[in-house]
Image (cartoon, rainbow, N blue to C red):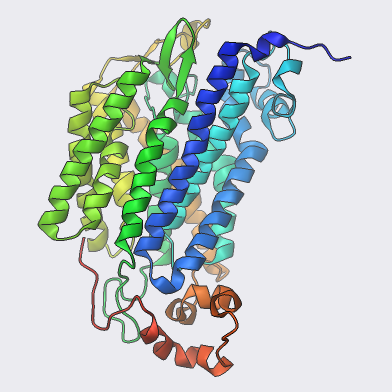
Length: 477
Protein backbone atom coordinates (compact mmCIF):
# COMPACT_ATOMS: atom_id res chain seq x y z
CA UNK A 1 0.00 0.00 0.00
CA UNK A 2 1.34 3.42 -0.98
CA UNK A 3 2.17 5.83 1.80
CA UNK A 4 -0.02 8.94 1.90
CA UNK A 5 1.32 12.40 2.71
CA UNK A 6 -1.74 14.26 3.93
CA UNK A 7 0.24 17.45 4.55
CA UNK A 8 0.24 17.89 0.76
CA UNK A 9 -3.51 18.49 0.86
CA UNK A 10 -3.68 20.96 3.75
CA UNK A 11 -6.28 23.72 3.72
CA UNK A 12 -3.63 26.31 2.81
CA UNK A 13 -2.45 24.24 -0.15
CA UNK A 14 -5.98 23.67 -1.43
CA UNK A 15 -6.78 27.40 -1.22
CA UNK A 16 -3.56 28.31 -3.02
CA UNK A 17 -4.32 25.72 -5.69
CA UNK A 18 -7.70 27.31 -6.29
CA UNK A 19 -6.20 30.81 -6.53
CA UNK A 20 -3.68 29.72 -9.17
CA UNK A 21 -6.32 27.65 -10.95
CA UNK A 22 -8.39 30.80 -11.55
CA UNK A 23 -5.31 32.55 -12.91
CA UNK A 24 -4.49 29.68 -15.25
CA UNK A 25 -7.97 29.36 -16.68
CA UNK A 26 -8.26 33.14 -17.09
CA UNK A 27 -5.47 33.11 -19.67
CA UNK A 28 -7.90 31.24 -21.92
CA UNK A 29 -10.07 34.36 -21.87
CA UNK A 30 -7.10 36.25 -23.30
CA UNK A 31 -6.95 33.71 -26.15
CA UNK A 32 -10.69 34.09 -26.70
CA UNK A 33 -10.43 37.86 -26.64
CA UNK A 34 -7.65 37.85 -29.23
CA UNK A 35 -9.85 35.64 -31.41
CA UNK A 36 -12.73 38.10 -31.20
CA UNK A 37 -10.42 41.00 -32.08
CA UNK A 38 -9.15 39.14 -35.15
CA UNK A 39 -12.72 38.27 -36.17
CA UNK A 40 -13.69 41.92 -35.98
CA UNK A 41 -10.72 43.16 -38.00
CA UNK A 42 -10.60 40.41 -40.66
CA UNK A 43 -12.56 40.31 -43.91
CA UNK A 44 -15.83 38.42 -43.53
CA UNK A 45 -14.72 35.76 -46.02
CA UNK A 46 -11.81 34.76 -43.74
CA UNK A 47 -13.43 34.72 -40.29
CA UNK A 48 -14.09 30.96 -40.08
CA UNK A 49 -10.58 30.07 -41.17
CA UNK A 50 -9.12 32.62 -38.74
CA UNK A 51 -10.85 30.88 -35.84
CA UNK A 52 -9.87 27.40 -37.09
CA UNK A 53 -6.20 28.35 -37.51
CA UNK A 54 -6.03 30.06 -34.14
CA UNK A 55 -7.65 27.16 -32.31
CA UNK A 56 -5.31 24.64 -33.89
CA UNK A 57 -2.20 26.76 -33.34
CA UNK A 58 -2.90 27.36 -29.64
CA UNK A 59 -3.62 23.65 -29.12
CA UNK A 60 -0.35 22.57 -30.76
CA UNK A 61 1.62 25.19 -28.84
CA UNK A 62 0.01 24.26 -25.53
CA UNK A 63 0.45 20.51 -26.09
CA UNK A 64 4.14 20.87 -26.94
CA UNK A 65 4.73 22.97 -23.82
CA UNK A 66 2.95 20.36 -21.72
CA UNK A 67 5.01 17.64 -23.35
CA UNK A 68 8.51 19.07 -22.77
CA UNK A 69 8.45 22.88 -22.63
CA UNK A 70 7.61 23.34 -18.96
CA UNK A 71 10.61 21.23 -17.97
CA UNK A 72 12.90 23.74 -19.72
CA UNK A 73 11.54 26.54 -17.52
CA UNK A 74 11.96 24.35 -14.41
CA UNK A 75 15.71 23.95 -15.06
CA UNK A 76 16.34 27.20 -13.14
CA UNK A 77 15.00 25.60 -9.94
CA UNK A 78 16.98 22.39 -10.43
CA UNK A 79 20.14 24.49 -10.83
CA UNK A 80 19.41 26.52 -7.71
CA UNK A 81 18.72 23.46 -5.58
CA UNK A 82 21.90 21.71 -6.69
CA UNK A 83 20.76 18.95 -9.02
CA UNK A 84 23.84 17.30 -10.63
CA UNK A 85 22.26 17.40 -14.11
CA UNK A 86 19.58 20.14 -13.98
CA UNK A 87 18.07 19.49 -17.42
CA UNK A 88 17.82 15.73 -16.88
CA UNK A 89 16.34 16.28 -13.41
CA UNK A 90 13.77 18.72 -14.78
CA UNK A 91 12.77 16.33 -17.55
CA UNK A 92 12.48 13.37 -15.15
CA UNK A 93 10.03 15.28 -13.02
CA UNK A 94 8.24 17.70 -15.31
CA UNK A 95 7.81 16.37 -18.81
CA UNK A 96 4.31 15.02 -19.57
CA UNK A 97 5.32 11.54 -18.39
CA UNK A 98 7.44 12.71 -15.47
CA UNK A 99 6.91 11.57 -11.90
CA UNK A 100 6.02 15.00 -10.51
CA UNK A 101 3.47 15.68 -13.24
CA UNK A 102 1.97 12.19 -13.26
CA UNK A 103 1.29 11.57 -9.55
CA UNK A 104 -1.38 12.87 -7.23
CA UNK A 105 0.16 15.19 -4.65
CA UNK A 106 -0.83 13.00 -1.71
CA UNK A 107 1.59 10.31 -2.93
CA UNK A 108 4.64 12.60 -3.12
CA UNK A 109 6.84 13.20 -0.09
CA UNK A 110 6.83 16.96 0.71
CA UNK A 111 10.51 16.66 1.63
CA UNK A 112 11.15 15.93 -2.05
CA UNK A 113 8.60 18.29 -3.65
CA UNK A 114 6.46 20.48 -1.38
CA UNK A 115 3.12 21.95 -2.50
CA UNK A 116 2.84 19.60 -5.48
CA UNK A 117 -0.76 20.57 -6.26
CA UNK A 118 0.22 24.23 -6.54
CA UNK A 119 3.14 23.36 -8.83
CA UNK A 120 0.99 21.14 -11.01
CA UNK A 121 -1.57 23.92 -11.45
CA UNK A 122 1.29 26.25 -12.35
CA UNK A 123 2.11 23.83 -15.18
CA UNK A 124 -1.32 24.59 -16.61
CA UNK A 125 -0.73 28.33 -16.12
CA UNK A 126 2.54 28.06 -18.05
CA UNK A 127 0.86 26.05 -20.81
CA UNK A 128 -1.88 28.67 -21.23
CA UNK A 129 0.82 31.35 -21.51
CA UNK A 130 2.16 29.52 -24.59
CA UNK A 131 -1.38 29.32 -25.93
CA UNK A 132 -1.75 33.09 -25.54
CA UNK A 133 1.64 33.59 -27.22
CA UNK A 134 0.52 31.58 -30.25
CA UNK A 135 -2.80 33.41 -30.37
CA UNK A 136 -0.88 36.68 -30.66
CA UNK A 137 1.60 35.35 -33.25
CA UNK A 138 -1.25 34.09 -35.42
CA UNK A 139 -2.89 37.51 -35.27
CA UNK A 140 0.04 38.93 -37.23
CA UNK A 141 -0.52 36.46 -40.07
CA UNK A 142 -4.29 36.18 -40.46
CA UNK A 143 -5.77 35.98 -43.96
CA UNK A 144 -2.52 34.92 -45.63
CA UNK A 145 -0.47 32.23 -43.82
CA UNK A 146 -0.63 28.57 -44.78
CA UNK A 147 -1.79 26.12 -42.14
CA UNK A 148 1.31 23.93 -42.09
CA UNK A 149 3.63 26.90 -41.65
CA UNK A 150 1.68 28.18 -38.67
CA UNK A 151 1.49 24.76 -37.03
CA UNK A 152 5.20 24.04 -37.44
CA UNK A 153 5.90 27.38 -35.77
CA UNK A 154 3.45 26.53 -32.98
CA UNK A 155 5.31 23.33 -32.18
CA UNK A 156 8.76 24.92 -31.96
CA UNK A 157 7.46 27.91 -29.99
CA UNK A 158 5.77 25.66 -27.47
CA UNK A 159 8.33 22.91 -27.07
CA UNK A 160 11.45 25.04 -26.63
CA UNK A 161 11.50 28.71 -27.68
CA UNK A 162 8.92 30.40 -25.45
CA UNK A 163 9.93 28.25 -22.43
CA UNK A 164 13.57 29.16 -23.13
CA UNK A 165 12.79 32.87 -22.83
CA UNK A 166 10.90 32.07 -19.63
CA UNK A 167 13.95 30.22 -18.33
CA UNK A 168 16.21 33.17 -19.16
CA UNK A 169 14.06 36.10 -18.02
CA UNK A 170 10.94 35.04 -16.11
CA UNK A 171 11.16 33.48 -12.68
CA UNK A 172 12.96 34.11 -9.40
CA UNK A 173 15.99 31.97 -10.26
CA UNK A 174 16.36 32.51 -13.99
CA UNK A 175 19.90 33.39 -15.15
CA UNK A 176 19.07 36.97 -16.09
CA UNK A 177 16.75 37.61 -13.13
CA UNK A 178 19.64 36.68 -10.84
CA UNK A 179 21.60 39.52 -12.43
CA UNK A 180 18.92 42.19 -12.32
CA UNK A 181 16.32 41.60 -15.05
CA UNK A 182 12.83 42.21 -13.70
CA UNK A 183 9.50 41.02 -15.09
CA UNK A 184 6.07 40.47 -13.66
CA UNK A 185 3.16 39.67 -15.98
CA UNK A 186 5.10 37.91 -18.71
CA UNK A 187 6.38 40.94 -20.61
CA UNK A 188 9.44 39.05 -21.90
CA UNK A 189 8.09 35.54 -22.69
CA UNK A 190 4.66 36.76 -23.85
CA UNK A 191 4.57 40.33 -25.17
CA UNK A 192 8.13 40.91 -26.42
CA UNK A 193 8.52 37.31 -27.65
CA UNK A 194 5.20 37.30 -29.54
CA UNK A 195 5.75 40.84 -30.82
CA UNK A 196 9.19 39.99 -32.21
CA UNK A 197 7.95 36.82 -33.90
CA UNK A 198 4.96 38.73 -35.29
CA UNK A 199 7.25 41.40 -36.74
CA UNK A 200 9.46 38.87 -38.54
CA UNK A 201 6.48 36.83 -39.73
CA UNK A 202 4.56 39.83 -41.09
CA UNK A 203 7.71 41.06 -42.84
CA UNK A 204 8.37 37.73 -44.55
CA UNK A 205 4.71 37.13 -45.44
CA UNK A 206 4.34 40.54 -47.01
CA UNK A 207 1.21 42.70 -46.85
CA UNK A 208 -2.29 41.51 -47.63
CA UNK A 209 -3.66 42.43 -51.03
CA UNK A 210 -4.70 46.07 -51.04
CA UNK A 211 -3.13 46.86 -47.68
CA UNK A 212 -0.86 49.65 -48.95
CA UNK A 213 -1.59 50.00 -52.68
CA UNK A 214 -4.79 49.71 -54.70
CA UNK A 215 -5.47 46.23 -55.98
CA UNK A 216 -7.49 45.95 -59.23
CA UNK A 217 -9.24 42.84 -57.95
CA UNK A 218 -9.61 43.66 -54.26
CA UNK A 219 -9.71 46.49 -51.79
CA UNK A 220 -7.84 47.35 -48.62
CA UNK A 221 -8.46 45.14 -45.58
CA UNK A 222 -11.26 46.80 -43.64
CA UNK A 223 -12.63 45.97 -40.18
CA UNK A 224 -15.68 43.77 -40.55
CA UNK A 225 -17.15 44.24 -37.08
CA UNK A 226 -15.63 46.66 -34.57
CA UNK A 227 -18.19 45.49 -31.99
CA UNK A 228 -16.33 42.16 -31.86
CA UNK A 229 -13.09 44.06 -31.30
CA UNK A 230 -14.61 45.84 -28.31
CA UNK A 231 -15.94 42.54 -26.92
CA UNK A 232 -12.52 40.91 -27.32
CA UNK A 233 -10.76 43.74 -25.52
CA UNK A 234 -13.23 43.54 -22.62
CA UNK A 235 -12.55 39.80 -22.30
CA UNK A 236 -8.82 40.45 -22.14
CA UNK A 237 -9.20 43.24 -19.59
CA UNK A 238 -11.44 41.05 -17.45
CA UNK A 239 -8.89 38.23 -17.49
CA UNK A 240 -5.72 40.22 -16.78
CA UNK A 241 -6.25 40.78 -13.02
CA UNK A 242 -6.62 37.02 -12.52
CA UNK A 243 -3.61 36.37 -14.74
CA UNK A 244 -1.61 38.73 -12.53
CA UNK A 245 -2.41 36.56 -9.50
CA UNK A 246 -0.86 33.62 -11.31
CA UNK A 247 2.39 35.61 -11.60
CA UNK A 248 2.84 35.73 -7.81
CA UNK A 249 4.18 33.59 -5.00
CA UNK A 250 1.72 33.57 -2.08
CA UNK A 251 3.34 32.29 1.12
CA UNK A 252 0.85 32.07 4.02
CA UNK A 253 2.14 34.00 7.00
CA UNK A 254 4.98 35.54 4.96
CA UNK A 255 3.39 37.64 2.25
CA UNK A 256 2.90 38.00 -1.50
CA UNK A 257 5.83 38.16 -3.92
CA UNK A 258 6.11 38.83 -7.64
CA UNK A 259 7.42 36.18 -10.04
CA UNK A 260 10.92 37.69 -9.57
CA UNK A 261 10.41 37.33 -5.83
CA UNK A 262 9.95 41.02 -5.14
CA UNK A 263 7.78 41.73 -2.11
CA UNK A 264 4.35 43.09 -3.07
CA UNK A 265 0.64 42.72 -2.27
CA UNK A 266 -2.40 41.55 -4.20
CA UNK A 267 -4.20 44.83 -3.52
CA UNK A 268 -1.28 46.90 -4.78
CA UNK A 269 -0.99 44.78 -7.92
CA UNK A 270 -4.68 45.20 -8.67
CA UNK A 271 -4.61 48.99 -8.15
CA UNK A 272 -1.52 49.34 -10.34
CA UNK A 273 -2.99 47.20 -13.10
CA UNK A 274 -6.23 49.17 -13.18
CA UNK A 275 -4.32 52.46 -13.08
CA UNK A 276 -2.39 51.51 -16.23
CA UNK A 277 -5.51 50.14 -17.89
CA UNK A 278 -7.59 53.26 -17.19
CA UNK A 279 -4.84 55.67 -18.20
CA UNK A 280 -4.31 53.70 -21.38
CA UNK A 281 -8.02 53.84 -22.08
CA UNK A 282 -8.13 57.62 -21.74
CA UNK A 283 -5.00 58.09 -23.88
CA UNK A 284 -6.30 55.64 -26.49
CA UNK A 285 -9.63 57.47 -26.66
CA UNK A 286 -7.84 60.78 -27.21
CA UNK A 287 -5.91 59.24 -30.10
CA UNK A 288 -9.02 57.61 -31.52
CA UNK A 289 -11.06 60.81 -31.55
CA UNK A 290 -8.18 62.83 -32.97
CA UNK A 291 -7.59 60.33 -35.80
CA UNK A 292 -11.29 59.49 -36.14
CA UNK A 293 -10.30 55.84 -35.81
CA UNK A 294 -12.34 53.99 -33.15
CA UNK A 295 -9.90 51.09 -32.98
CA UNK A 296 -7.65 53.13 -30.70
CA UNK A 297 -10.51 53.60 -28.24
CA UNK A 298 -10.69 49.83 -27.85
CA UNK A 299 -6.97 49.03 -28.02
CA UNK A 300 -5.68 51.87 -25.81
CA UNK A 301 -6.32 50.04 -22.51
CA UNK A 302 -4.40 47.01 -23.82
CA UNK A 303 -1.40 49.15 -24.79
CA UNK A 304 -1.42 50.81 -21.37
CA UNK A 305 -1.56 47.48 -19.56
CA UNK A 306 1.27 45.98 -21.62
CA UNK A 307 3.39 49.09 -20.96
CA UNK A 308 3.04 48.51 -17.22
CA UNK A 309 3.37 44.72 -17.22
CA UNK A 310 6.87 44.77 -15.67
CA UNK A 311 5.85 47.37 -13.07
CA UNK A 312 2.72 46.15 -11.29
CA UNK A 313 4.43 44.30 -8.43
CA UNK A 314 6.97 47.02 -7.56
CA UNK A 315 5.36 50.25 -8.76
CA UNK A 316 2.90 52.77 -7.37
CA UNK A 317 -0.48 53.86 -8.76
CA UNK A 318 0.96 57.17 -9.95
CA UNK A 319 3.77 55.40 -11.80
CA UNK A 320 1.25 52.99 -13.31
CA UNK A 321 -0.93 55.88 -14.47
CA UNK A 322 2.10 57.39 -16.19
CA UNK A 323 3.13 54.12 -17.82
CA UNK A 324 -0.44 53.46 -18.94
CA UNK A 325 -0.84 56.93 -20.45
CA UNK A 326 2.39 56.57 -22.44
CA UNK A 327 1.52 53.10 -23.77
CA UNK A 328 -0.95 54.07 -26.54
CA UNK A 329 1.38 56.77 -27.85
CA UNK A 330 4.22 54.22 -28.07
CA UNK A 331 1.82 51.89 -29.87
CA UNK A 332 0.81 54.67 -32.27
CA UNK A 333 4.44 55.50 -33.07
CA UNK A 334 5.16 51.80 -33.66
CA UNK A 335 2.14 51.45 -35.95
CA UNK A 336 3.19 54.48 -38.00
CA UNK A 337 6.72 53.12 -38.37
CA UNK A 338 5.35 49.78 -39.60
CA UNK A 339 3.19 51.51 -42.20
CA UNK A 340 6.17 53.50 -43.39
CA UNK A 341 8.09 50.24 -43.80
CA UNK A 342 5.08 48.64 -45.55
CA UNK A 343 4.82 45.90 -42.92
CA UNK A 344 1.18 44.87 -42.64
CA UNK A 345 0.87 44.26 -38.91
CA UNK A 346 -1.44 46.76 -37.15
CA UNK A 347 -2.09 44.86 -33.90
CA UNK A 348 0.50 42.69 -32.16
CA UNK A 349 3.69 44.61 -32.90
CA UNK A 350 2.20 48.04 -32.01
CA UNK A 351 0.43 46.75 -28.89
CA UNK A 352 2.86 44.13 -27.56
CA UNK A 353 6.36 44.77 -28.88
CA UNK A 354 6.49 48.58 -28.78
CA UNK A 355 4.94 49.16 -25.32
CA UNK A 356 6.50 45.93 -23.98
CA UNK A 357 10.05 47.01 -24.76
CA UNK A 358 9.44 50.62 -23.71
CA UNK A 359 7.90 49.57 -20.39
CA UNK A 360 10.64 47.04 -19.62
CA UNK A 361 13.35 49.63 -20.23
CA UNK A 362 11.56 52.40 -18.34
CA UNK A 363 11.25 50.18 -15.26
CA UNK A 364 15.04 49.92 -15.31
CA UNK A 365 15.24 53.68 -14.73
CA UNK A 366 12.27 54.25 -12.40
CA UNK A 367 13.26 51.34 -10.13
CA UNK A 368 17.01 51.42 -10.54
CA UNK A 369 18.54 49.61 -7.54
CA UNK A 370 15.36 47.79 -6.41
CA UNK A 371 16.17 44.31 -5.06
CA UNK A 372 14.95 41.40 -7.16
CA UNK A 373 15.53 37.68 -7.75
CA UNK A 374 16.36 34.79 -5.43
CA UNK A 375 14.36 32.30 -3.40
CA UNK A 376 13.77 31.72 0.36
CA UNK A 377 16.26 29.44 2.08
CA UNK A 378 18.95 29.85 -0.57
CA UNK A 379 22.19 31.81 -0.36
CA UNK A 380 24.78 33.42 -2.59
CA UNK A 381 23.64 34.14 -6.12
CA UNK A 382 20.29 32.49 -5.32
CA UNK A 383 19.57 34.46 -2.11
CA UNK A 384 16.39 36.56 -2.03
CA UNK A 385 16.97 40.14 -3.18
CA UNK A 386 20.65 39.70 -4.05
CA UNK A 387 20.26 41.29 -7.53
CA UNK A 388 19.31 44.88 -8.38
CA UNK A 389 17.21 46.21 -11.24
CA UNK A 390 19.23 48.30 -13.70
CA UNK A 391 18.51 49.72 -17.17
CA UNK A 392 21.28 47.72 -18.81
CA UNK A 393 20.06 44.42 -17.44
CA UNK A 394 16.53 45.25 -18.61
CA UNK A 395 18.06 45.92 -22.02
CA UNK A 396 19.92 42.59 -21.82
CA UNK A 397 16.58 40.84 -21.20
CA UNK A 398 15.02 42.59 -24.19
CA UNK A 399 17.94 41.67 -26.47
CA UNK A 400 17.94 38.04 -25.29
CA UNK A 401 14.21 37.74 -25.93
CA UNK A 402 14.42 39.37 -29.36
CA UNK A 403 17.24 37.04 -30.39
CA UNK A 404 15.61 33.84 -29.10
CA UNK A 405 12.38 34.79 -30.87
CA UNK A 406 13.52 36.68 -33.95
CA UNK A 407 16.32 34.45 -35.26
CA UNK A 408 14.32 31.16 -35.22
CA UNK A 409 11.30 32.97 -36.70
CA UNK A 410 13.44 34.29 -39.55
CA UNK A 411 15.08 30.90 -40.20
CA UNK A 412 11.75 29.08 -40.19
CA UNK A 413 10.26 31.63 -42.55
CA UNK A 414 13.20 31.25 -44.96
CA UNK A 415 12.88 27.46 -45.01
CA UNK A 416 9.12 27.58 -45.47
CA UNK A 417 9.46 30.17 -48.21
CA UNK A 418 11.90 27.94 -50.09
CA UNK A 419 9.40 25.09 -49.83
CA UNK A 420 6.52 27.30 -50.99
CA UNK A 421 4.76 26.57 -47.71
CA UNK A 422 4.53 29.99 -46.07
CA UNK A 423 1.89 32.11 -47.81
CA UNK A 424 -1.39 31.09 -49.43
CA UNK A 425 -1.77 31.58 -53.16
CA UNK A 426 -2.97 34.85 -54.62
CA UNK A 427 -6.17 33.19 -55.86
CA UNK A 428 -6.92 31.68 -52.45
CA UNK A 429 -6.40 35.04 -50.77
CA UNK A 430 -8.72 36.71 -53.28
CA UNK A 431 -11.48 34.12 -53.06
CA UNK A 432 -11.24 33.87 -49.30
CA UNK A 433 -9.87 31.17 -47.02
CA UNK A 434 -13.27 30.17 -45.69
CA UNK A 435 -14.19 28.87 -49.14
CA UNK A 436 -10.81 27.49 -50.21
CA UNK A 437 -10.24 25.64 -46.92
CA UNK A 438 -13.77 24.85 -45.74
CA UNK A 439 -16.02 25.24 -48.79
CA UNK A 440 -18.44 22.39 -48.06
CA UNK A 441 -19.11 23.72 -44.58
CA UNK A 442 -19.52 27.31 -45.79
CA UNK A 443 -21.93 26.55 -48.60
CA UNK A 444 -24.12 23.94 -46.98
CA UNK A 445 -26.70 22.34 -49.30
CA UNK A 446 -26.68 25.22 -51.73
CA UNK A 447 -23.37 24.39 -53.42
CA UNK A 448 -22.37 26.52 -56.37
CA UNK A 449 -21.16 24.93 -59.62
CA UNK A 450 -17.39 24.44 -59.94
CA UNK A 451 -17.05 27.23 -62.49
CA UNK A 452 -18.26 29.72 -59.90
CA UNK A 453 -15.51 28.68 -57.52
CA UNK A 454 -12.69 28.65 -60.05
CA UNK A 455 -9.90 31.26 -59.89
CA UNK A 456 -11.20 32.85 -63.10
CA UNK A 457 -14.33 33.91 -61.21
CA UNK A 458 -12.44 35.20 -58.18
CA UNK A 459 -13.12 38.85 -58.96
CA UNK A 460 -16.86 38.34 -59.18
CA UNK A 461 -16.92 36.39 -55.93
CA UNK A 462 -14.84 39.02 -54.18
CA UNK A 463 -17.20 41.79 -55.17
CA UNK A 464 -20.11 39.84 -53.71
CA UNK A 465 -18.50 39.56 -50.26
CA UNK A 466 -20.50 41.53 -47.76
CA UNK A 467 -17.45 43.04 -46.11
CA UNK A 468 -16.12 44.80 -49.20
CA UNK A 469 -17.02 48.24 -50.51
CA UNK A 470 -15.52 49.24 -53.89
CA UNK A 471 -12.90 51.95 -53.80
CA UNK A 472 -12.97 52.04 -50.01
CA UNK A 473 -9.65 52.18 -48.21
CA UNK A 474 -9.12 51.45 -44.50
CA UNK A 475 -8.26 54.54 -42.44
CA UNK A 476 -4.55 54.90 -41.85
CA UNK A 477 -3.39 54.22 -38.33
